[in-house]
Length: 149
Ligand code: HEC
Image (tube, rainbow, N blue to C red; front, side, top):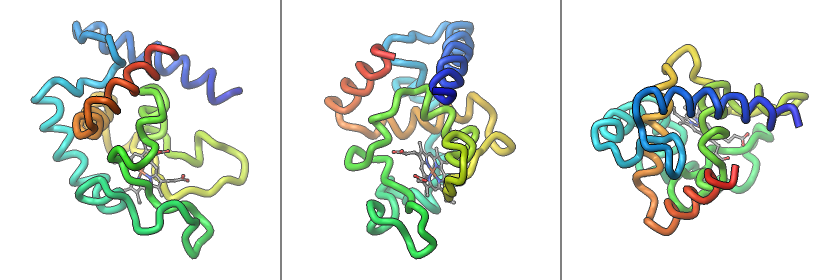
């Protein structure tokens, strides 16, 4: 349950950050309705995420099966993937620290952490861009997942 505790602590921190900027926290901490943040997020996505997750957020081919190296391919970030199954706090931690650091043990993952590359606001912006592309019903479900945290 260590991961859950870390996620909780980070969520509190990120929520505090967003609060300080007078962001409406209903539905989570991602500024997905803020056009400027989403536009910045789109360019951050293109530069840092598209090479693996796809220019159209489509993920890698056969992403549900392990690749030749035994690791999982990059899943889509559109509504066909499972990015929206995770609350904001987990998406933030995955992007900041990478999946190996979060899962721990011997788990090997090709999802890098971006803590040396992107600051916290840039991470929120890129995730906001991803969320802004989802259909309304997926956004609503994701807002509920955040509220149930
Ligand atoms: C070098 C390739 C690569 C790059 C670049 C990359 N990712 Fe990933 N990402 C992956 C892989 C592979 C996975 C699945 C890893 C696993 O499950 O072990 C993943 C998984 C994720 C997940 C979890 C999704 C889920 O449904 O569980 C999130 C969130 C994510 N990436 C966000 C990002 C963001 C945001 C960026 C850009 C800032 C990014 N990734 C850049 C390879 C990459």
